[in-house]
Length: 482
Image 1 (cartoon, rainbow, N blue to C red):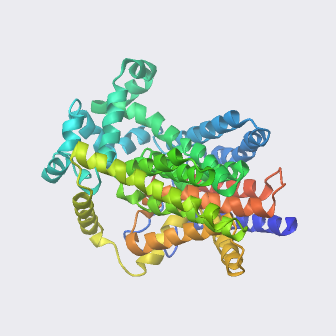
Image 2 (cartoon, rainbow, N blue to C red):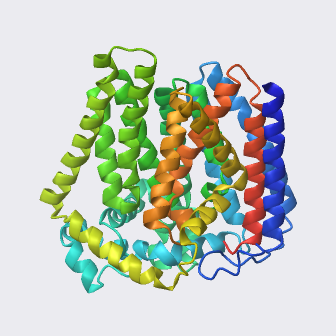
């Protein structure tokens, strides 16, 4: 088994090398798909070799943090992982031509519009959220507000308010001065705070991911292994300074982790809180609606495993009661938004979908379902995709043989969620829109690797996969227009 696992790890490294060559060659065959893939462009940075070295070595350095976790030093391990991820993403932002100026440009363009709207609506937060529908339809809130529920703008309003507090302005004074000399001059404090806060929030996802591994797969080590795969995923490292990467994975993973904790331990408060966090996430983006299914799925996984182990039916069904509590939490918080903030989720959803349909009308539709998955896994990392495909195959075989272990059931559930997303939302930009799924995919891969090598303290194949993914992220950074 150990030899087979080592061979599998070597194959994943080779897949990473082949993918890197594919990017360097200019994505032959894919760049001809208009509207789907970024056209390659070389940045030619002299620091690339150094970045590759750091990317390849960092996962092995992080292994020390994982060993500390194995010894019970969870605070130190979690802190190290969050810090490494935050610094890595900031470093890759600055690796682009122009250094910091490229970061300010990213915060100014596209969804950076939210920074300016939040500044203009400063002091009018409640009025803005309560009149969101009318303001959005009139164009008062910019171009993107019509495509989302109010929570995204609420997050930027909170960011703007926090950035103007004296402690933050004092702490970030040098960074704010730099932002003032950029296109972000009008919103310099909020831009400076976003530059540091967004990467930190991105990797704060590691904490609920470790909790999810412990609750769902009965092993905190699986959560740490998944955290390393999440940390090194190219999409997570490269899709930066954007709420899709900074906030939505954190909300989605936290919600599912709480659902798993509640269903496993029998704690009603955890299950209800999981539903509440899910409602908050869906208030920010309808893209997190699949988290409802994943939260309920945790209860199904745990109940199914109990039935197989011969647990009396009454006890085996307890997780299903917690699934109902999870849904109750979701409904309660959504109802509070409806009553308190005059939020109409159905109308907002219909209008957002209509606008997205209009925006995506130019995207070629041939093979669109397949292309959406190709785009997602290309940027999530082909090595991770192949590892997930292998785990999916093994999970399917296990279920056919009636071995309903939690890792197998979870892997099948994640795959089913991706299939539904492709069928219902398959379009371009899914590398960003589905980024919240990467923690769950990482957990499926980590769970399978750990199940086959339960006593391996070295984590050889896992570290090889993470190092390959991180190095691939650097290659993608210098061959793509990020």
